[in-house]
Amino acid sequence: MSLILDALRKMEQERRSRRGADQDLRPEVLRYRLAAQPKEPRRYPVAVIGGVVLLLAGVGAGFLLKGHAPQPVAEAPVAAPTPQAPVAVVPVAPAAPAAVAPPVAAATAAPPVPAPVPAAAPTVAPVVAAQAPAAVPQPVAQPSRKASRAAAAPSAPADLPQGALHEPAAVAGGAQDITISGIAYQDERRMRRAVLNGMLVGEGAEVGGARVLEIKETKVKLSRGGRVFEVPFSSGLQSR
Image (cartoon, rainbow, N blue to C red; front, side, top):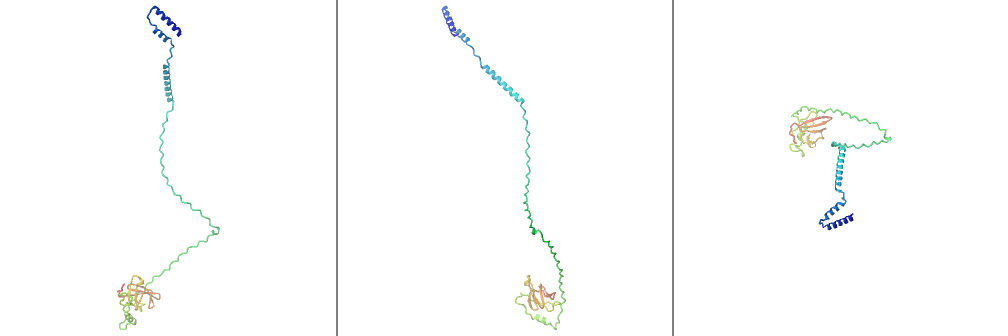
């Protein structure tokens, strides 16, 4: 086709040149050439339309899926676990060891011995000191031998403290042969002393067959033949 067109164009040019026409055939030929060329289909509108269609399809599918999708269920708040009070741990007592069975030989136990009943203490009758009878005045004209011996006794022994000697006491009934010349009274019983019949004695000593049981501040307790009596000291000026 191009060769034919070229031949025609040349012929037209020669004809015009012959006629002396000054018209230029180039624009027409070019226009014709452009019109004779096949037009390529426009792809841009088709692509745009396809993209729009796909976009609409995607949006529609999304709406459909969203409409059919199950609604999310609101989760109920879970209550916090209640704190439990600490349980007191009770210490477990260790188990008692199992009792070991005694041997057969020791199985026969001896019969229980009855507890001894304490014997009642014998009632001791209180010893009542014999009341000393009134002092018997000695006759002045005939002084007894023992009174003279008591008067002739030494004034004071070497181991008695000062003021230990006192006036002779009256003779108690049943002990007329025992006279008290002085009493040295101390808080400690082992330190107490008395002058009986001119002899310095302590508790536990024997004078005139009588045993000295206790030396008091104003009298001396003695015992003779199972009878307890007291010999008083009348002056009361004993030393301590």
